[in-house]
Length: 461
Image 1 (cartoon, rainbow, N blue to C red):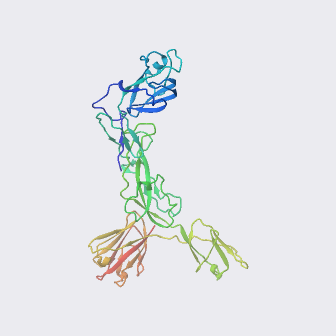
Image 2: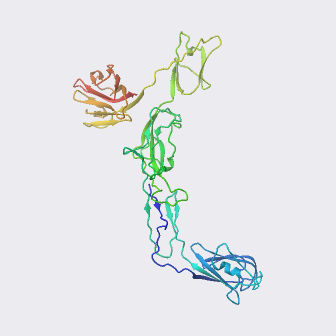
Image 3: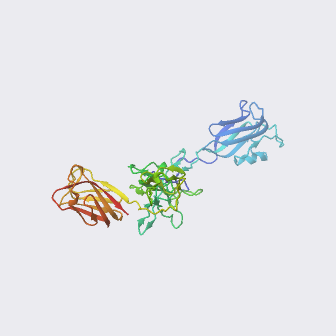
């Protein structure tokens, strides 16, 4: 993140040498026959505008107004107008009005009796300072300060804004956290919102939390334009699986109309080094059609529509029905339902698969989203080889309860899983351990002969 630069009331720019005296004669402008109308800039100091009917040859005579305006970086303090006979600066009220320079006041052409129209002006003297205005233009969007270099040395002091901080509870940062049990395409948030620290004793936060959602294939944080202040939901996630949520604090800028200070302006925090991995559940479920007799649904005795569209039941089952969708069962002509019963089926288990792969090591750990598998065996050819001197421990890293574990083993290898023993659960003698109900499962072997495992699928709640 780039740092912001705060400028003080004095703009943190102090003149060291070369200050010009106020009221210096900057330029003398002489009337000419080729400039009797419109606007013209002289010596890059001032622009003269003739508005009216002027007709002189070596003067500005006629009926109209003369206005003098400075160019950028020039300050005019006074303007003197001269006739072809004498300095008329102090002879009439109209000239007095423009003596103290006012950009909104024009000099009107008068005669000596105060009548417009025939008192010519032959030259104008412009007094003031020709130093560029020493102001800093702050751009909050790009966090940059710009100024025009004057004709003297300056001192520039950037004051870096502090980084916005997370609120703390018992000295623990209140970061966003994953929310479990959210279904795909729902409007439910998939993370709890992070909390930002306040500015001093006020209720105003030091910034706002920004979020971005990516797939688990995203190895680095996305670009800043991918982030939003909206807490991410599952609305645009169409299938079950894991997603990554990245986040950071966008530091608060000075309130509109207030100068930026170290107390009201904060720098962005770094984007999180480790995104949050969130598991989103499938929002599609199966319907198992049961029949009290042999007249099953797929025998043609009834029709089924899902969301108003005809659906085909195969082998008594309709798969992948989106939750919240209307399902309608209608008996065909010649048949009649006495009633239709619907019962809650078994809820699908949550699961995570960890594959054992890699080189040959004495100790190794493979980590998934909610579980890790750590062994002490020899993973020759990328497999666990368990014997009576080794073991593998399946451990819940965030408190999930293991309900069942299914092992896969190396094809054409030693598949004697019945030679394994387990610290909890009931082994079915093939590849599954049921009724674990624990956060840790330790697997060992009862024989010298190695059992080669490729991976494990862990079911949990």
